[in-house]
Length: 324
Ligand SMILES: NC(=O)c1ccc[n+]([C@@H]2O[C@H](COP(=O)([O-])OP(=O)(O)OC[C@H]3O[C@@H](n4cnc5c(N)ncnc54)[C@H](OP(=O)(O)O)[C@@H]3O)[C@@H](O)[C@H]2O)c1
Image 1 (spheres, rainbow, N blue to C red):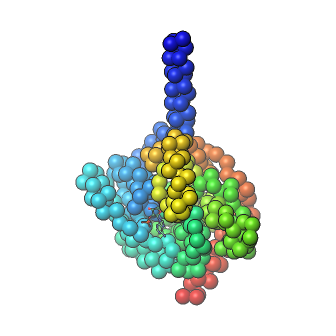
Image 2 (image 1 turned 90 degrees about the vertical axis):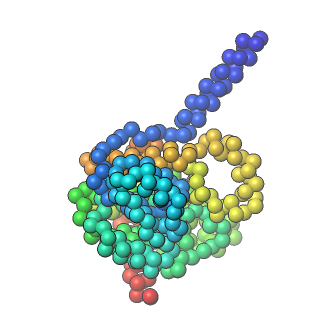
Image 3 (image 1 turned 180 degrees about the vertical axis):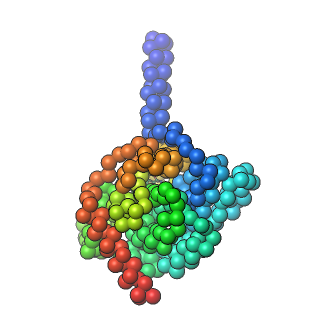
């Protein structure tokens, strides 16, 4: 009897351990010499961006990152630990057109080339309908259009690299997309009696879908290789907007042990980003969508959609520029 109980506990423990390892995801085992590369990443004050910078720092490459709040303590500690790595913070607010321009101006002045640009910064699920300073729905502006504009402003610098690449930190949430080229601000969803409650997740899905389409079209328009990825479900502050609702907070409080079990910490969350950095140029699939350190398949994409989104994004940029 005692033995059966012991065996049952042991089996449950082993199944649990196996499940935990499965949900934690793969570790990047691919390596190349990146010590001479200049890597620019958006975000970095916390979450996946910060962890990526931490992981990259030991490779002695040059890292430039941009976000709204400067993580002073993190930066000082990292610079002390890795004195041979150049890590610079430049303020960037992707919701402000002038901030994007100022950031790009500084990078264009201070950097001689960009080898890898990681579009990582992002927000998810704003509870109220918000807009960027340039009048675009805040998630679409922060996660897609702002970075698109920034990438355009940095294009000459990116092209100076021998093997440049763009990495878009997208998400599996792109499957929630309902991208409508005539309604990029998601007006119809927000005003629908039935759908307005979940509009914000649609809007987020649209941004992540747009990033994948962008990764597929980048090379055709610029000659620069690009890819996108899903980092996994990672315990970061990306849920902060939803957590400001009491009911969501309560659910998370109760479900936290289960949520923690099925999700990744930042170290594992960054592994697919690292993988896309570490792949040699000939190994990186242009326009590919990566997940768990391997090539995966994005849904609902097409060449037509990718091309149309690029054209519309250029038109939006001209419109915003001419209205300033
Ligand atoms: N965590 C997940 O489970 C998960 C899953 C799939 C995809 N992703 C994607 O991974 C990326 C990183 O998210 P995370 O989980 O690391 O979230 P996070 O912990 O909330 O970090 C978000 C980062 O984006 C920056 N950011 C936000 N708004 C910005 C703005 N207007 N201008 C410049 N920077 C801004 C933030 O810096 P400041 O606030 O200082 O500006 C911060 O460094 C996002 O694109 C997200 O969609 C995350």
